[in-house]
Length: 292
Image (cartoon, rainbow, N blue to C red; front, top):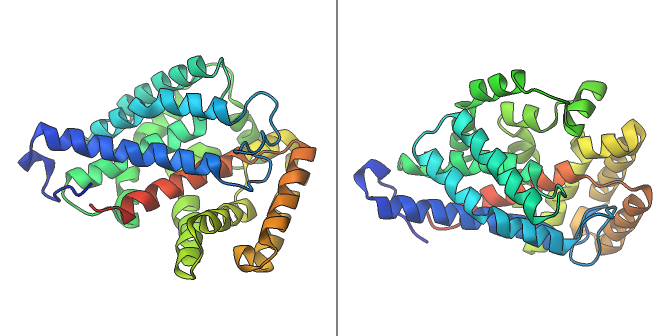
């Protein structure tokens, strides 16, 4: 959908509505693309449940259906230059809908956080009449940094698995990614995705290449929670070996990626943080390459 680059103040409510829905469609499509991608080491996909016993692809589809209006709401909030507190409230409500749809299974909590912020940032940039560049998106994300810090300092109750892992292993996790403007998205996954596409890879191969770039460099808190530093070292070493041998441009890439998938399943490792970052990267790329 081609939308005018005039600021939204010079357009009407119908354009604001169209913008929010176009961004939401990109967000849901990107989450679906990540879900159906194969092979993905240890993660739920179209062929199996990976290292999980409590969820499958249909669980994720129910979650996606429950979240479709959330991204409309965050995009509309972005056009209004909403505060982080408002975005956080929308995210918590979306988490509740997700858990209701999945009978309590956490399928998309990380994606709700990352893609929710990005939806608002994309809408904020587009509402100002500008194209969505990496630099502009990161600049928009930084505007919510103070609110994110304040929200983290005031969070009551027991820490989440991610926060416990971050404290134990002195790694940043999802919140640190957001505070820094999602460097794993803009400095690791998106360059890998773009370079693979430029070299002639089809979308599936390019997405696998981007995922393995993330696996090779990100300290995934889900892996640390399930297997500690030994597991993280295995994931990063194996992903680096995959890339060093040519990645998806080696003719045996499907067999090597599938072998890592099977080993991660056997070890009960699921790099869900990297899956969320891949979805976020596909979201940004989809928005940037569609007509603006």
